[in-house]
Image 1: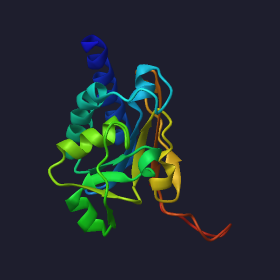
Image 2 (image 1 turned 120 degrees about the vertical axis):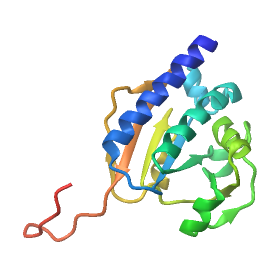
Image 3 (image 1 turned 30 degrees about the vertical axis):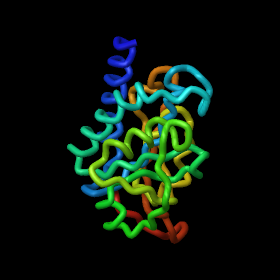
Length: 184
């Protein structure tokens, strides 16, 4: 299993670096992470949550996003209504309303629970408006992304057995045929 965990962690690091290279994010932007450890193992989402996988992957996510100056946000599972675990600094900076719940393996999922245990000052909020996101295992992070979401293509489309997708956001294009838009 250790060999598999090392491969999964290495693939995740590659995916995050691909994502960061394409997503055009700014310091202090928020990246929502949806992660089904069940799907990574090859099981159906929500059926076999793995703290072992979460504990191996959390430091990879944290290190890569910290180095980029970004806030990591971890989406919980449906048993806590997809509430999001973030650092208190992020919650205060963006004015997100805190809720009372402690995510864990059976309610929130292994990744959100691991994030809560390992963050410096974790808080849980009901909703956020993230600038971008990575979805490991089809957890449907879209409810926590700003409008308009744009797919980010990466060199990998799988972490373990889990399907991998990512998105960044951009402001809405308004104005119609005669409008002009900045080049990005």
